[in-house]
Length: 138
Ligand code: CMP
Image 1: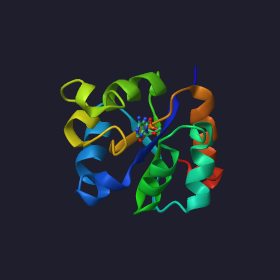
Image 2: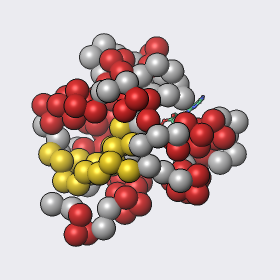
Image 3: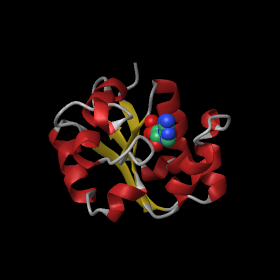
């Protein structure tokens, strides 16, 4: 089991001024920030990052949303990082997310759901390499 996961704070959360609150909750939950950047995805970037979803009906909407403004990307470190971070962010649909989770607090819909967390150790490694070189990791 790996001890890192990849987080994105999505454009909706930045537009609504939630970067600071989200980072505070993430570090308070015991995650260490190993890498961090503010960046904006191009359409090519988003299509590549989300290629597993390219046949899904929401793919175009997802790419539009994820490219419409800056995001924060981070590698987070903690024992059992992938699973514990998915618990912290809550269900994809904020209406079904548990009280106190990041999506319950900050997301507005299934599409615009404020925060991303990797769904497996394998994807955490792929997604971390998408955003960060080795020299950007501490
Ligand atoms: P995330 O789990 O971070 O990565 C896949 C994204 O696709 C998901 O967040 C949502 O932003 C989006 N998504 C998943 N299901 C739907 C849906 N039914 N309608 C719109 N967007 C979706």
